[in-house]
Amino acid sequence: MNILVIALGGNAILKRGERGSYEEQYYNITETVSKLADIIELGYRIVITHGNGPQVGATMIRYDAAKTLVPPFPLHVAGAETQGFIGYMIQQALVNEFIKRKIDISVATVVTQVIVDRNDPAFNNPTKPIGPFYRKEELQEISRLHPDWVIIDDAGRGYRRVVPSPDPKRIVEIDVIKRLVKDDSIVIACGGGGIPVIEKEGQLIGVDAVIDKDLASERLATQLGASKMMILTDVEGVYLDYNTPHQRLLRETNLDEIKKYHAEGHFKTGSMGPKVKAIIRFLANGGSEGIIGHLEKAKENLVEGEGTHIFP
Image 1 (cartoon, rainbow, N blue to C red):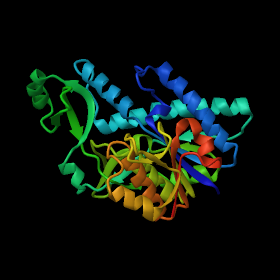
Image 2 (image 1 turned 135 degrees about the horizontal axis):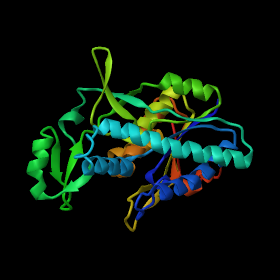
Image 3 (image 1 turned 180 degrees about the vertical axis):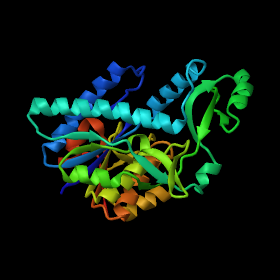
Image 4 (image 1 turned 90 degrees about the vertical axis):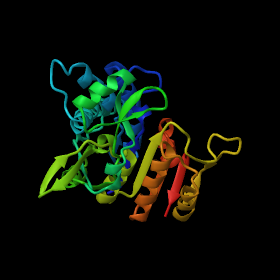
């Protein structure tokens, strides 16, 4: 079976400058799924992953604003909530697109848990900002209400909570996803990197952390035995010396070369770095091709050589 894991960037759901209303997000998703349907019509069975950063942030703000009326939930539950409603929008929009094209394929969202190591060093060094900004005068009350939170000054814009970003190890629901894919269903999984869980005395326990969505997508692609993994974002592909007069787009490269560029620090941690790292891991674990390219050229990335293509 020709399995392709597609990791959608944030621009697939929410554009820069938008407020994040349901209508805005659903419209963006309808535009996105038309591009995914083009790929499905080529004969690929795709598994879709997506981000949820702005949506989790908005959910945490809602928790905070309503905390005197209803008890706020932990971050890992916010991750589950956003997986659910984003998955709902994608699967509904995709089914509607299939109806227009007379495509008879089922679509399902799997709310996905991802196992992380409770001894991961990231738990001792939280770095991922989440939720609302706080004023300096609010910090004492925040510390009283949440003594376990780590709060930092976020680039002078205010104070924010930061949480760990541990490395993903294993997809809990992988067998369910495999069965759905084998049944020719389109699966939406690992939203926002999945819900981080640890194993303790044979039980799964949710933890407040954020898993990088592209690294989680690699775990999913590898465990599924996917042949290709494509990361869709808002730039043309992978650049060397990005945002300088000497920037150069890599159209085609191999694992050894991209590992060298990664080690040399060409790709920033907060942007292209995790994407390249995910593709490196995918190819090192047996994948046949990794692609990074613009969302607007999803089909062209596959069949016309657009974007960046990385081979073992």
